Length: 112
Length: 115
Image (cartoon, rainbow over all chains, first blue to last red; front, side):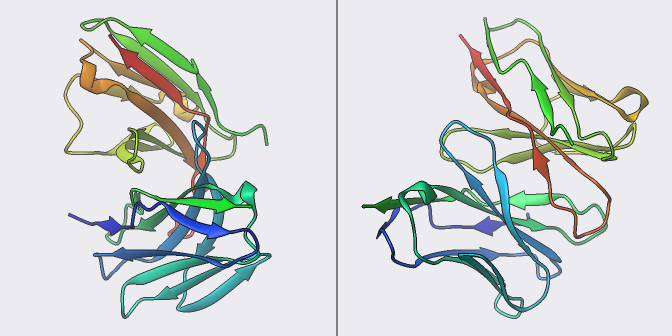
């Protein structure tokens, strides 16, 4: 059973702070890693993808990948109330089918 | 790119009835996925197609569930003899290639309520 683990939260941060969201995965052969944002009642939307160890930055978002530790994280700088949502980590399995497995998501609350 | 389209947005049905959902993927995408999501959980994989071929089904998928993708275009997901436990958001997603680097693009989902 390939698993993706996330703390369900909620993670509460003040406006302007850095929010740090974490994800661990069980399949050592996993190859692609994605962060999705999901507002209440809406469908997931892609924020970031990362495939190699290290950091990848896109605007206020930074994804970090450490394959040795089987750990991927998402940092949100200068958090805004509009960032309040559930953040889903998705990991693409090894073995050829490349079907993303999702974590349960972390609820982020950014308070003014 | 008109995005992934799902129909209906909401469906309320009585236990024991059959329901069918439709998904129209992004036109150039050859992979189509169905996921199910319940409150407080992440999307759970159900099945996926590459073109018209259904390549994998979740072991958790009951035989009351069937999916088709005729001609590799739109897809339908049918649930027969619905049960209250089938109540969930059913998400369709598509991707452009079968490589490891292809993110999923989701539709707005169909919310099913079984009474």
